[in-house]
Image (cartoon, rainbow, N blue to C red; front, side, top):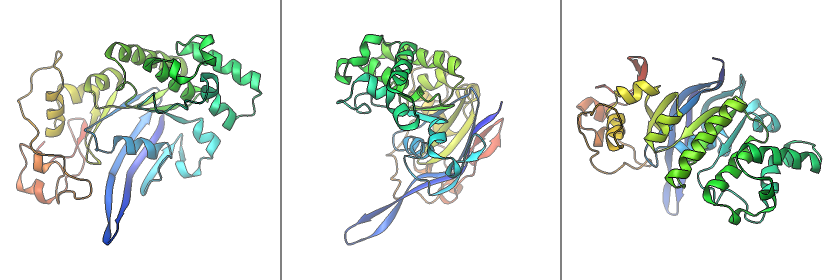
Length: 313
């Protein structure tokens, strides 16, 4: 498969300044590397605060990276002009209630990318919007309605339609179904799979819901406090996890047909990204942590066809 997106040694740090105190650095993303191929789905999973959404914002240039390299379609992201960039990668946000302008009609919301990035006439834009609305399961007469007239699932379909208007190659989906009822979640996920086939899309699917990640992903990247702890194929991660954090995540999810893994629980609270432990960030909560884990940061190493950052994997 052809590589669409390449991320190497990506960092995103924030300077936190307080009155009468020296500034501190919040390390939201630390040394993230992965790639995405055409028609592939990459799932990103981890607890709240692990850096998933920050990663999405950096990839869509809503936030500037601190260091590292991002290449999209063979070009460094900094060298891709604005119009080309928006035709390559788009994002669907978590909250369909907050991501849509309440003062705009559905037609204008979906047409926004065309207004900004193309020279199409008003009639041409309208025709394209109506066509896209039908593809995402919204009737033509909905075009004149405002967001508050729609259900949560319909609003998310509006967001998906807007993201697809420039026919991007990559769609980043940041918890796209977490705010929806379970029955509506299934409809939206199936719609996304249908659209992927029609538009030849690659997805980066961000979620804390492991059942959604398992359903949608070809490969999975597990994050903890800004770092990758395990990265491999869906079957490898779900059938034989190697990192203790991945094992605990899987144990905490509702069981399907997976074999039961030896039971562990997370001890203590998630450490602050402002005050990371000296060694492995997971060591204070890890059931198999050794002295080495408390003093050294494990590097990602290839073990059994996947990358794992653990001394005891």
